[in-house]
Amino acid sequence: MSSGTVADMVDDLRQRIDSGALEPDEKLPSTRVLMETYGLSDNAVYRAIALLKAEGYAYSRQGKGVFVRSRRALITGARRIRGITHPGERIEWRYSTRTEAPAWVAEHLGAGECVERARTVRRGDEIKEASRSWVHLDVVGVVPELDEARPCNPTWQAVYTERSGNPVKAVSVIADARIATDDDREALGLPAGTHPVLFTRTVYATGDRVIGVGESVPAPGNPVDLTEH
Image (tube, rainbow, N blue to C red):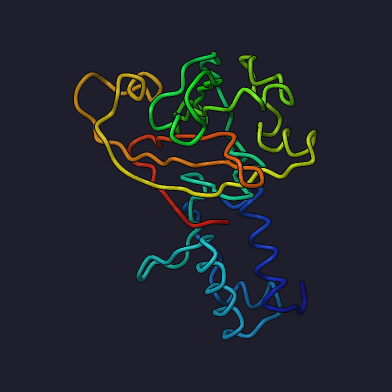
């Protein structure tokens, strides 16, 4: 690219990171190389890097350069509804069952039966995240796949939106910590013992009605990023 703009550089690097061409913690090219690649001045390259950092795509290591930030930990909002995996990752389904809503779920969905689904996200042999979702039975009429032990492509929220015409939004996300439960340990492959873990809970709604909630537990060592993308 002989000449360009800050937006060109940002768009290109963003696409390369999203596609997996640039992997988490990979070092970005030097300022000089970026200047030559995108036909920009050093100040323009600095502005582009600052935008990538502000959007959560990059971070600096003092004296070492600029690196790609991992986008795995938490994808919220519309990005999470479109899909929860990144290139090289896969979903492994653990179970899907009808169950009575746990107390915290009932606070959002109402008491009674709902569909509970559990899965893990892996990159190679490494478990990156375990998650569960609880979905109102009304949604099953639109997305019957919820009762099956297989993924909804790309997610139940996106499928529901497409089929019903009613957009689903992630209306709130909270993060907290706890001692790993038996289910956490089983899903994440943790050994016996006491393991503190972080978790996030997301509430999904269409219009003014909550139709699902989700809980994600990243494997120890994976950060939780509450930035909305």
